[in-house]
Image 1 (cartoon, rainbow, N blue to C red):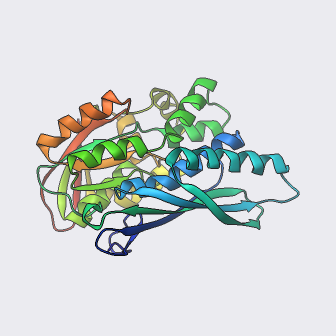
Image 2 (cartoon, rainbow, N blue to C red; image 1 turned 90 degrees about the vertical axis):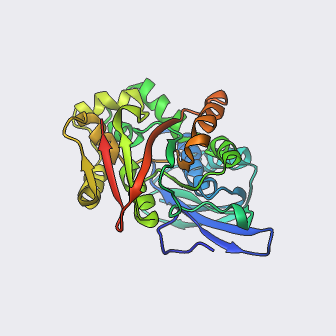
Length: 308
């Protein structure tokens, strides 16, 4: 049902009239010093693709690359324990995995989920007039860069872990009650890149209002210090030809627009009459969501405008 045509978050394969399988995988290198919290973040990130398709995770398998003899075994044990705790929180079951001896430590999951074939969400089905809800604040890439530079404060690290380790489970369970038209999650391509995937796939123009974009407050300080991840510059270079940025938009908001996220929030398209009710329901359950923009019309190649 969903393959590689539109760079969607996961593959979807119909089993019968009532069931479709969702399949995804993701893994990456540590972004923080705590192995346990790294495991939680990596697992939440992998599970997120299932939620972005509107599904429920069923099983997970560990993917491990570990420098045997260079790092103590406790690092791997705590990482896997962190991942297992997030798998259990999601309601899925760990059923195995695979490990290799590698000079660079990496961890993540291959996840299988389930969804009704009629309720599959994709990133190429947005409609003109839709409002876009972002369910997590941006800034994890900038703060992770500050962590690497050993500049991040304990409070900033704590906030990074809080945001990046949060499952998108609650946001997914709420959004599907309001019949979203399209969905993706915000990860390595930043808000700009994942917005463009929606715009290109749906052949639409999307306007995003910078003053409405939620962000982690500590990220502003580090961005103003020049701690912008290389991925943000790569994202800007790759996507800027398809994006108009109003000259009055604050520089920091331009930076955070392209900031690559680790385990970011869902980006949900909903009809105008449903968006406000969905947002209220999310706020009632503690989801840090905001309506950040709208689909304004048709465009054959997709186009994004970042406005004040």
